[in-house]
Length: 328
Ligand code: SIN
Image (tube, rainbow, N blue to C red):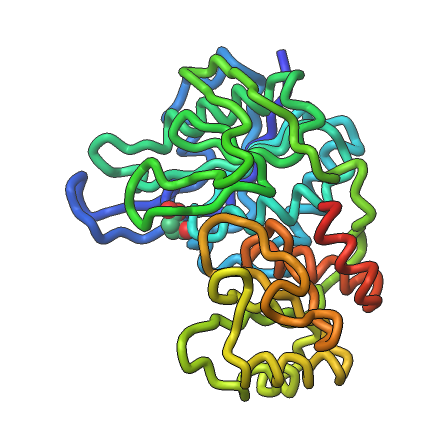
């Protein structure tokens, strides 16, 4: 039987509400051992051990915890203490943690993130079946080599493609563009494809021994976007900026000039989009070559931020970082 380690970080899957039918709740309070005890069916799928890494709502996920989770996953695999890892996590920032691990885990073994949209104490809680399916994927040899996988509501998503699309619905995660990686039905897994971009063992990014990551801020574009936020971010220590641009990564002319000024001072500026799907290309309406800006290709702003943070641990060469956005 496969050995699956569950690393718990909190989230709604470990949330508690005052009653079974109450909208308000607090995330993360139910410890991992209680989640495992409540699901005796797991013992039929894998040899399970739980570990409490944090007990937070994933709005509070941060670089230090990412580094801690990555170090723990890499250590478990390096010591051959687990065949697969499941990370229970809030859904709010799950896609960011998943993509970070997709890029820094140094093993082909499965890393699976799951959570829930309804707290553990809720009527029709979705967490138990999500956890069951996540463990089944982590225990499955065929999941190896597919990078970090998000499992929720019977769907498998590649960490690179997945995004949260609804604030409250149990069917919240979507993978616009490439589509689902597969499906899970009461532990029976079907795969549709393999991720085509680089990840895990092919990735150049190594965060072993790191205690922090470079600061990268996200600026949200809108009609009448003011030009001065880019300079404010730089003065607060940002080494990189990601723009959640309008349409194909567009910003107001004044903001484009301010981004060019930030780039001229050495910041790496990546144009992504606030639109939920589609690529952002170079030199479409904004002259990236002239302004010294980069295009995010297919990554949304929050994942562009993750990739740019990791790129900045290695280089500040614009051409190399642009290539990274095409390769990862
Ligand atoms: C969180 O992300 O921790 C809260 C929301 C959720 O888990 O669904």
